[in-house]
Image (cartoon, rainbow, N blue to C red; front, side):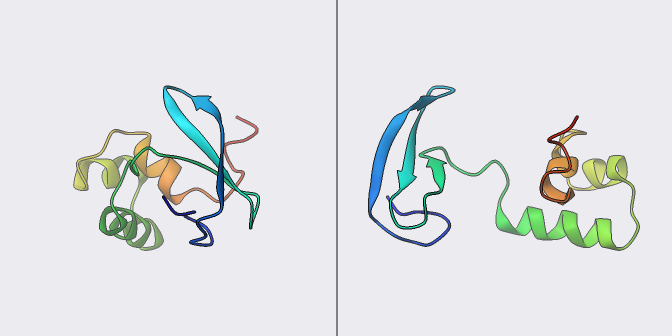
Length: 84
């Protein structure tokens, strides 16, 4: 397994999270799980492009066949949902 942020292989187990093993990269100190990404890179790129073209969040969800909250998590700025 490789770190998703730096592609390093120096990982250490840090316990389970939501049923998946959690790892910490010793090189960049970021956490990740062994769970597959929820959306493919192509789906994320399409959702972001639709958002940048002033398409509404619900319309993006319908167009990309996602759940209504999926595009929100994909297109939101980092930390935007932390206060919600």
